[in-house]
Length: 202
Image 1 (cartoon, one colour):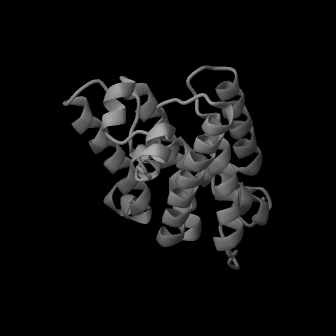
Image 2 (cartoon, rainbow, N blue to C red):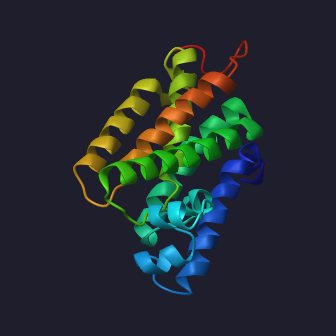
Image 3 (cartoon, rainbow, N blue to C red):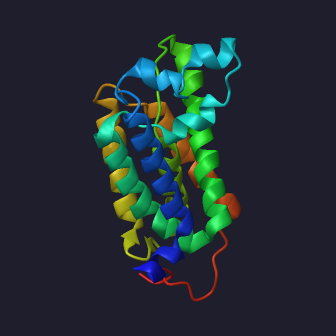
């Protein structure tokens, strides 16, 4: 178990940090309460623009609204992040993760300003969609497969998740789209296919 964990330490560390932050906040108040989350770093455009609290673009990536929100995101993070980290390495993985998360939050903020619908938002989903975006590019470069994950499977998951988001309430779809696009772009910029890679044959 320890040997396998070492293979993707950044993925594991990010998941652990998210869980710890959630547990700490859970002992202090209700993580499903927007006002409480706002006090602890959640995204809110009026605070971002009027008060210059740009740190929220970053801190909101480690906050989650309730156990279900945390659980769903952490399962996706570990499953997708593990594969991407093995493919591109620790540093590049972290670049993909944080650039995508920030890009997702920036697009979300821009959309809130454009539509005038200001909502308190938080979650790692923008960064996780960035991981998926980067994996999509890696899959394209490796004939449609990355280890045990197929490119078709990734596309299906993205379409299904986006469909669920647009047909449900309380989902920050712009963060997902922004993260996905940024992750794919980071994949283009950072990924270099090596000879004899495990996913190079269908």
